[in-house]
Image (cartoon, rainbow, N blue to C red; front, side, top):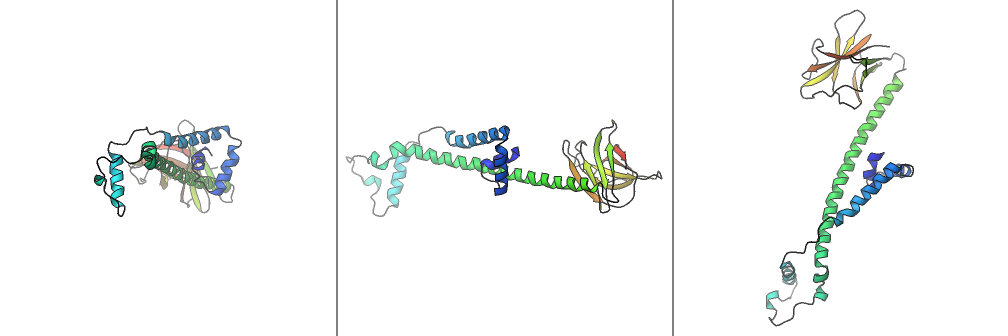
Amino acid sequence: MSRQVAGFALHALEPAEEFEVRAHLARCPECSGALRRHDTVLAGLARTLPAVPPPAGLRNRILSAARAESPGAAPDRARRPDAPPPDRARTGWAATGPQRVWAAVAAAACVVAVGGLAGQAAGLHRQRDAEVAQVRDLGRLVTGMDAPGSTHATLTDGHGTPVAAVVAGPGARRVVVADLPTNDRAGSVYVLWGLDASGSAPVPLGTFDATSGHTDVTTLPAGGSFTAYAVSLEPGRTAPAVPSRVVASGSVV
């Protein structure tokens, strides 16, 4: 929920999401504090630019350009040398010109910054969608563990630490990666192997990648009956005929 706070501050959430965040903020001091910090940043953007005066001569160039574009207006050079300068109170430039220029610049900077935060919010939306899809996969996997004809195995590394699991059902075989080290996706790949009780050679069932600290679910084709599974880390991006380095294994229960 804390990742939704940035989108909430920008009013970039869907109505249902906004109501959910509002209800959460009422009981979560951490997220409420995060929202206040977002609001402070947004409010302070317009005050971050220094009050620098405009370049010399800018006023005259602007007024001359305005007179040149006005029908029937006399050019600035036509004014008599002894004529008084334009009424500054009437033009308002001396009092408010620099402020108006920099207010516009500050507004533009605010738009850029808000656009960046909006991009961040869009990225959070994509991340949230990926996580929702992952949760759904895990939910289907857990509910399918007790389905008729389903089997599962917990795979542990050489120290006995669970790092992955396999759930095989009538329609698919799913590999849940919990704590495997990240592989180099350009030059290596993990391979799932099936083993049967006869002691025959392991059967490569499919390849997948892993990211440290992240739970992934990979769906592989169903088929074959096995009493144990193993995972190996292989060079290249295809499964070899036999595993070269087994990193985890476990029996079917």
